[in-house]
Length: 256
Image 1: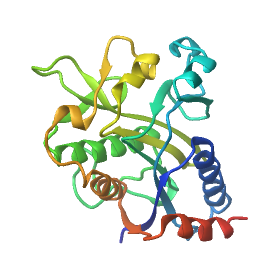
Image 2 (image 1 turned 135 degrees about the vertical axis):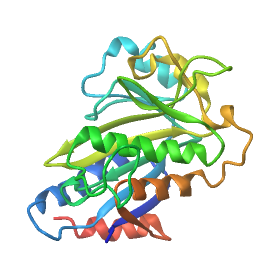
Image 3 (image 1 turned 180 degrees about the vertical axis):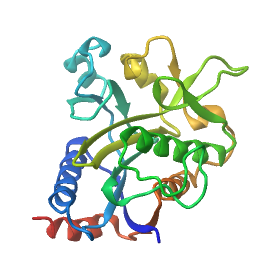
Image 4 (image 1 turned 120 degrees about the vertical axis):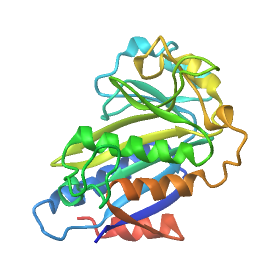
């Protein structure tokens, strides 16, 4: 039976606030990692004000402007503890932060892109591939043929008649005792000009794109589709809380 995945839709949230919430939820799951039945998995779905974040192994040389210059353009800068290099978060982007105990999750009961049913997700490469699969299926739902590029985490469109591969979704995670945090950022109607201020993900020879650039299909249902596909590919059942902020506050109150 799929495990419940509590989904908290939080709207526009400052990056540092979302990071603090993730750490508290992760700590609660880590504290109970040895228990057969621990706290429920969580998925935060947010949008951020313009912010550039640099991963733990990122290269500051890939940030092309100073923090002061970024601030003049209306963006902030944050060093963070996820994997990966520099990326941008901002309006028109769906950011999903799965806080999951991979010890308790398995591939769902069907054959999904070469992953056998029942395989544990306690493997970071397998987990990242599951997230990529969720985004690929979401893109397909609006008529965008997306996929992977060998050796480069994330989801890409092309190469095709419009050009070389271009990233539509960036990913970066952190894991402690197989409990995850951070996640993915899917460009939906994002202003792609922001990415000109950095070398996105440290990849200088490829560009970025958005669903709005790749399709004329309506994009209003993308967030719901992404949540549904994430839940499916990690073998969980999404439980959407109608009042995300209030439900999250109640959940956090129970975290020691």
